[in-house]
Image (tube, rainbow, N blue to C red):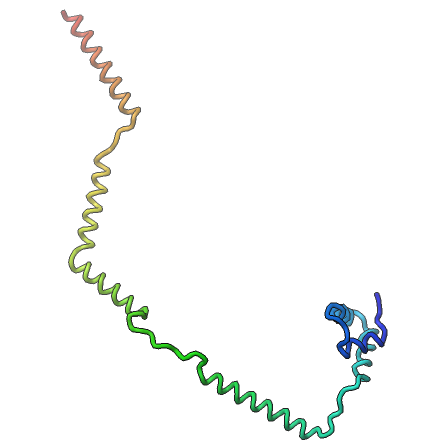
Amino acid sequence: MKHYAYDEWLKYVKNELEDDVREAYEDHLYSCDQCLELYLTAVEEDDLPIIENEPDFTDLVMAQITNQKQLTAVEEKEPKHPKKRVAFYQKSIFHYGVAAAMTLILMSTGVFQSLTQYAGGVESQGFKEKDTSMTEGIVDKTFAWMDSLERSNKEDNKE
């Protein structure tokens, strides 16, 4: 396992490394306790800015947070895009009402009943008009021919 030097960790803390190298350093920190200690030492010794008047700085930050919260609350109350009024004929309840009304009208005039009777008639005709297959036709003609031969033979024998 390769360990990184203290100077390299200082560059990491000061954000002087490229993104892919930074990712490699971060992955290394998960598995190496020795380098983690060097990293923590580098963070402690890094020259962070000194805040001279800490209470005023804290008050300033808190005021900005409060202002930001108020702005977001006002934005949530005001709609970003005002709702457009939808015409009554574009609402789905109107479409359902029209469909129900048409159904009642068609039922009361008997259109559906005449359709069912028509469909029943078509079905029954389909069952009555049974088409014979080609083989059945050939067999029937063969039997008829054989019957005619028998009749002619009987007539010849009688004479």
